Amino acid sequence: MSLMDALDATMPGISPGVFDEADFRAISDIAHAEAGIVLPTGKAMLVYSRLSPLVRDSGCATFGAYVLRIREDAAERQRAICALTTNHTFFYRESHHFEHFASEVRPEYLARLQSGGKVRLWSAGCSSGEETWSLLMTFLGEDSGAGNAIARRDVRLLASDIATHALAKARAATYRTEDLKPVPEGLRRAWTRASGEETTIDPVVQQIARFRSLNLLGDWPMQGQFDTIFCRNVMIYFDTPTKERLVARFAEKLAPGGWLYIGHSERVTGPALDHLSTMGPTIYRKRPA
Image 1 (cartoon, rainbow, N blue to C red):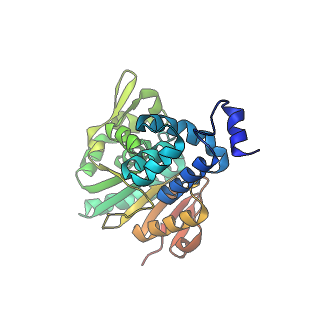
Image 2: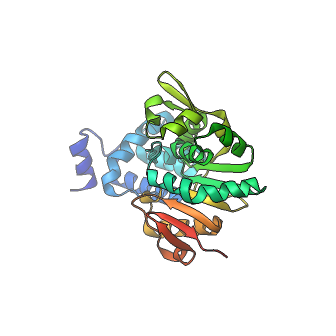
Image 3: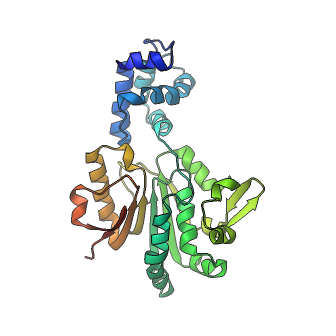
């Protein structure tokens, strides 16, 4: 079955003059070159449904015209890439990562802060913020008094994503109360403020995070290294060469002894294995210098 036959079967009435296989291929190539996103033929309907509103808003009558627009207009191209990204996430996702961080990593960082050192964390592909806040609440712990003292130390978390609409939600730090249920009760009690059906992350937690729009395939303006990087369920949308290049860059950005957490279906392969040791399910540590 051709791409257009598949489209006709799922959404009859799409005119080849509006959206055809050449348009899909062009958009797929742009998404891969710009953000590493792989769009196989089976994603044609996703492309059509997510970009149709942008095509209409741009005043373009066809996807072909819109392709020309995004090739020339960087801002419109960014909007298209944002529309094509998947931002599914939830609080305390893959809880074993946070449990490992709390038991194996956090004590060392607290001792470092206590002696006047600094801690730098990165939530790479933070989406709408659930991972960011889960990590920071875990770091501050269930004792709000002790957590407030920790927050006054030199600890910062960079939360980055390519999707500006997801970053806006992350910055707002307000979610449906029911969405916080996966978070351990002690952390919720210490670091969230419920108001009916909405819950907001405590300002003490918020002040540690810095949100930035960042394409992981582009230039990274950060100068220093990170002690821990979370990049989970982002690389599932990339092909193998892109994944390997990205993880190699993460390894370079990790301080010696730093930790990398990736998604449950992802694995480290390629050159990064020269620098990272497996420490648990989808948990890696950079070897000492």
